[in-house]
Length: 131
Image (cartoon, rainbow, N blue to C red; front, side):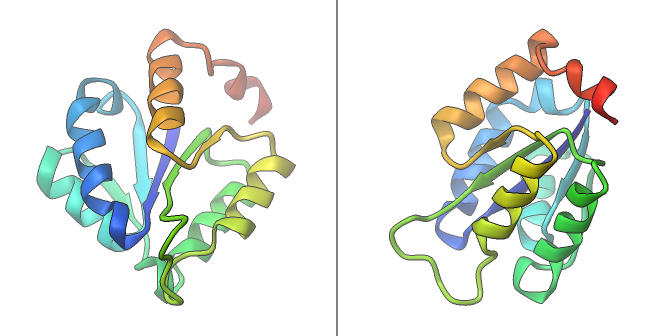
């Protein structure tokens, strides 16, 4: 499965910790991430991650294009709903594309954990038919 990881600045450490905790699951899949998030997670976990540009430099649009071509099976976008900065990726466009292409998206830790555990169980194998 192709899994995309994005995190607002205030949630990057949480994304690192999430990836450390679920490394044993994530390592079995192809990972994509916006630049800074990808670099931090890669350094913390030693996972191989395909990195886009930083979110504010076009990485969110690169990921959006991959979603639009139905090449992503799951998105984990840990967002900061309280103090999002103007340069951070916009959830709205990513969320809209996920809805159009029926791609599961998690925007908080609780949902991210549910999705990654479903990934481990094979509950998302129906995505292979969608591609």
